[in-house]
Image 1 (cartoon, protein in one colour):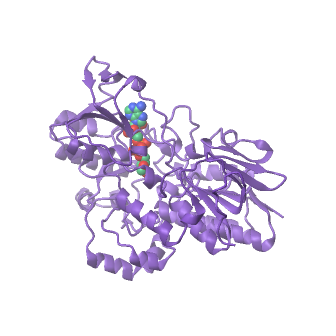
Image 2 (image 1 turned 180 degrees about the horizontal axis):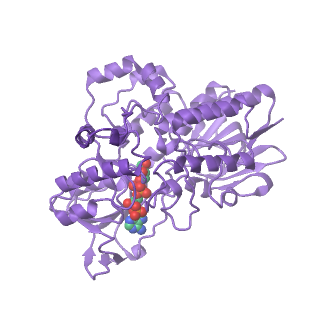
Image 3 (image 1 turned 45 degrees about the vertical axis):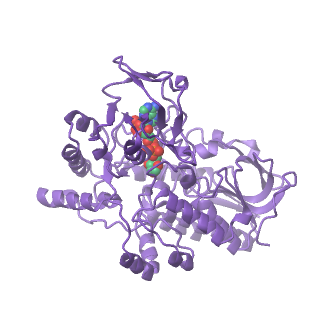
Length: 545
Ligand code: NA7
C-alpha cells in the first residue's frame, strides 16, 4: 500500500505509517521518499497551498539568498533537468511554482491535506502509536510522527507598544495577503529591519507616497546582485549537476560558496580590502567566505564589519541616516547576515525616512499613527510588520504535543529545546524532527540540511522495519551531551557573541529560554557524527521491539 486513504470522512481515524506535519520543502521530500520506501503517509499543512515558509512569506521582494540551482531538490535527476530557474536567487513566486510543481509531478497531493492544522499529537504508550488530531476534525493513528514544520513558521507575538490601538490595516510579512497590497500614494510605516524588512522595504518604497522605516537594530546588509541566469550557465550546471550536488554535500554550508582558505590577517591591508571589494561587487552570501576566520576571530570580523560600515558611508548621502544604518555591538554574522537589493540606496529616496528607535525611541502607536518619545506625531495609512519569528520551537509549542506519561513537549523543553542530533527528543518515541533545532538547518543551505534528515529518518525507519523494532527514542544523557556539543561548537565561533538579540538563541523573544539552537559545525562534520552514531547501533537512541 503506498498512499493514505482519502480523508473526506473526518470521523474515521486514518491509519498510516507516518504523519507528516508540514508540506514545505521537508514535508514534500518526506512524502516522496516515504512512498518510495513503501510507507503509507499523510501530510497536513495549514496553508492553502504547499510550500510552507515559501507559501506564507509572499511579501514584495521575498527571495532566497542561496543560488537557485542549489536551493532545490537533488532526489530526482529528471526534475533537475526539466525545471528552469530563471534568476540567480529564486524569488518567492518561483519557489512557490517549483514546490507546487513537485507536488503535482510526483502525485504527492493525494497524501496532502491543505488548510488543515495539526492541533495535537499524543503518544499512546499502550498502542505505541501517535494519535494526531487536526483542526478539521481528522484523527490519525501513526507509528511515526515526522515534524517537517520549518524553523521560521510561527511569527513572534506583536510587542510593538500601542499597536492594538492603531485602526488602519496591519500587514505581516510572514502572512502576506495572497492578492498583494497596493501601497500607491499611501503613508506607510514598516517595523523591522531583518531579512524580511530589508527585502520588502525597497519594494514598498517604490510604491508608497511616504515610507517611514522603524529600525531598532541596524543589520549588516550585503548586496544580492541578483540577475537573470545566462542559458549557457544553466546548461553547464545541468550538465554537471551530479558533481555539483556531490560538492555541495562535501562543504560545511551545504552549497558552493567559493570560500577562501586564507585568514584575514595573513594578507596585506590592500589585498584584504580588494578581496572584500571583489566579493561586495559579486554579491550574495559568498561575501562571508572572504576569509576563513571571519566568524571565529573578532579582529577579522572587525575588519569585515568596518568594510561594510564604510560602504554605508559611500552609498547613503545623509550622514545622520548613514550613521544610524551602521551596525555596532555585535559581530557581523552573529545575527543572520542579510542579503538585500538597494537596501542602503533606498534611504536616499525623498519619500523614505529612517526612524532610528535607539536615538528616537517610540512612545507608542496611536489610533492613526505613532508618537515618538520626543513628541513627534506620525500618521499612517498602513503598517507593515517584519518583526520576526518564534524561531525553531514556535511551531512545536503551538501544538499540543505529548509524549510518554502525557508529558508535554513544552514542559520537556522548558529549559530550551533538547534533542539528540536534532533528530529526536527523550520521552517522545518515533517523533523525528526535520532540519530544525540542534542541527545545521539555518546555518547551512536548508535544502541540503533537509535532504540529510529525510535520508536518515527513512533509513532509520527501514532499519526498524527490517529488524523488528517498534520504537526509537533519544536518551536523556545523549541529548544533554548533544546540547552541550552544540553550545561548545557555537562557542568556538563568534555567533553567540554581542548584543545581537538573535533568534539563533531565542533572544528575540522576552522570556524564551536561551540556548544556541542551530548546530554550527557544518553539514560535513554533522554527517560524520550521524554515521558514527548509526554505525555504533544508534548510540544515544534506545530501540525497542
Ligand atoms: P528577524 O531577522 O528576526 O528580524 C526582525 C526585525 O524586527 C529585527 O530588525 C528586529 O529588531 C525587529 N523588531 C522585532 N520586534 C520589534 C519591535 N517590537 N520594535 C521594533 N523592531 C522590532 O526576522 P525576519 O523575518 O526579518 O528574518 C527571519 C529570517 O528569515 C532571516 O534571518 C532569514 O533566514 C529568512 P531587533 O534586531 O530585535 O532589535
